[in-house]
Amino acid sequence: MHLSGRIVEITSNGRSLHKERGFLAVCADGETIGRVPLDDIDTVIAAAHGLNWSGNILAALAERSVPIVFIGSNFAPTAHVLPLAGHHNQGMIMQAQADATQPLRKRLWAQVIKAKIQAQADILTLIGQPNERLIRLKSEVKSGDSTGREAVAAQVYWPKLMGAGFRRDRGIDGANALLNYGYTVLRAATARAIVAAGLNPALSLHHVSDGQALRLADDLMEPFRPAIDLAVYDLVQKEQMDINKDTKAALAKVLQTDYRTDHGHTPLSHVLVRLAQSLAKIYMKEEKVLALPLLMYPVLDQLKLESP
Image 1: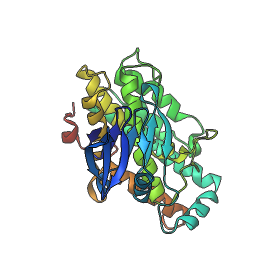
Image 2: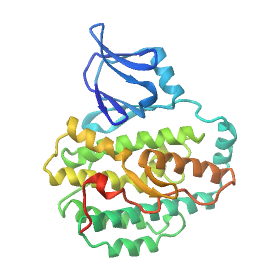
Image 3: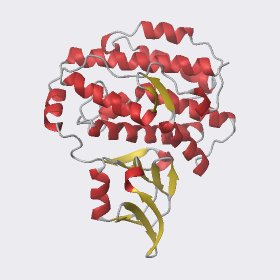
Image 4: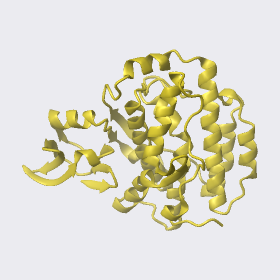
């Protein structure tokens, strides 16, 4: 069992997980080898085979809206387990979400994409790369990103961040595997925030995928992918390209890094909660704009990076 911040990862085969008072307990050969307070857990990642789960621990995690993520080859997620209910007003919120008009969803998606491109531009500035074209692309984003500025921005962004020869491919090792793991952590945290806000994670703003139950998580995590990208960039610069305990901890730590918000410095995990809550309020006609950070990059001193 590995504990990275508030993320518990089970990496050894044949472990048993059960509830022991207020703890998640992990057992091997009938003996408890580790315990974590249930209230301190954000996500459980199952990266091993032959795991045994008690009904009590599954219920306890669900009561706390803690997602369980199963990951497969190359650290890409294969399944998520989420609770059915996470908010006292869930029925009304989900109905309003289902009734949302296409123009509203398109307007919100444009806001998400503008924030993502701004974050990519900020990351390039932090590593000493020019970002003028990304700033221009952000200004060109239309409702629903109908002109595909997100895709064009990606073509500009990745070569400048990772080098001209880099290609984003979930099936490749090295930096791509690190990105897979980091995005898995971010996606799980986003899904938890969505459920806690009373939203249906399958009802998206934009993403379309047959059978995909976390399309809204894929939407709302977009502006924060660059925070994972920056952490991976830092690991690559240090020649730490393997998935191991240290690199996993570095990627999981991104959820605890602060962003500048209207409420002061706020950890990314809480930023995601406020973002999901604001979306629910928009659907309920209580707010009009998504709650995004004032600046779309993490506080620098926590990432041990300096502005050029």
